[in-house]
Length: 126
Image (cartoon, rainbow, N blue to C red; front, side, top):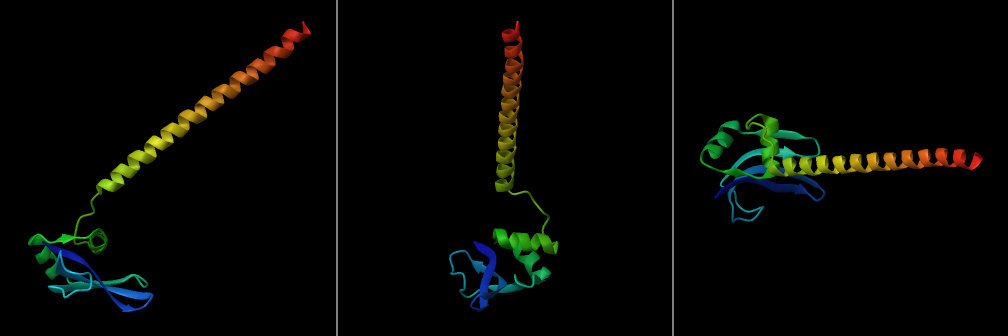
């Protein structure tokens, strides 16, 4: 299977990346089938060879998550919602509901305690 992924190059701690098409079993910095673009994370500079990328995608090449994000920013691929995002949103919604229920229960308990305190002095005065 052909993958579209980033190949690291540059100095230590000053990495830049080339977007390349490679065989999925080859090493990260191994020899690519084709170089398709460039990405510098420090300056956010991105250069993409749109024709070559579209050709590779039409041939069935699978982009990695990072490359997919770059392609979405470049307008080559429609932005899609990933399954991990959907799962995370469901978990966050469940956590918010649980927190709201807990807060409501605490508020109800506090109101009942306050009502009990208000009723207790009245009965001792009589």
